[in-house]
Length: 63
Image 1 (cartoon, rainbow, N blue to C red):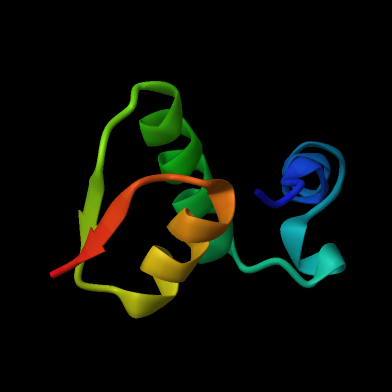
Image 2: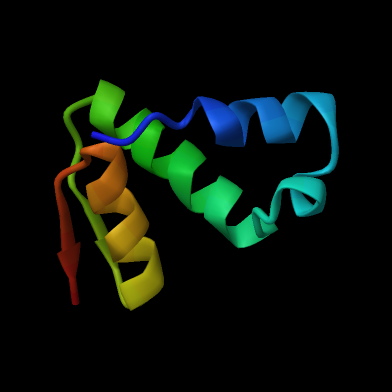
């Protein structure tokens, strides 16, 4: 599991770009955390997204 608090702080206190975080990464992590909380499996065509889902600890599948 990765500490996603830097992403949350970046999204709520400053602009994500100031922390070197792309908006796509924020979206991927929010989706992943929501899926993880609901024990859902995320399926994606995007390898970068699947990597982020894994970092958050979400069950996922590259299709």
